[in-house]
Length: 107
Image 1 (cartoon, helix red, strand yellow):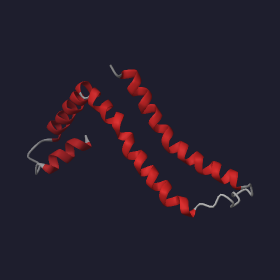
Image 2 (image 1 turned 180 degrees about the vertical axis):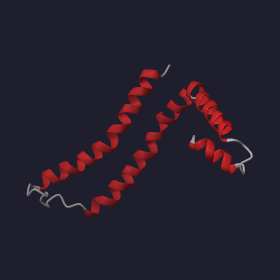
Image 3 (image 1 turned 90 degrees about the vertical axis):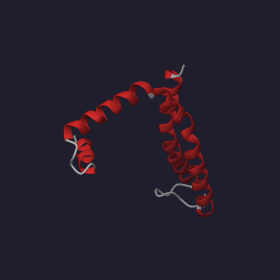
Image 4 (image 1 turned 135 degrees about the horizontal axis):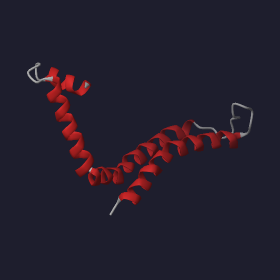
């Protein structure tokens, strides 16, 4: 309903909210039925940008990381490095689900 209101406001209220809702419903249906392969093609290559940004993040943070610093709980630098690697793993694990979905639903 909100999108119908937005479309109505953009058209200077010449279009009713009901017409806006029907337009969005039809567009959503067409994208969900015919755009499935296109969405998976996008997800097939979208990891590249994230990977490049993660490399930039690692490159920028690497000079400031000292593995000899103790962790917050007083452990050695190995625990600190493990915490950093865990953060990287959490950031990349969500893309594994997209890859599994792509392999399952691709032709």
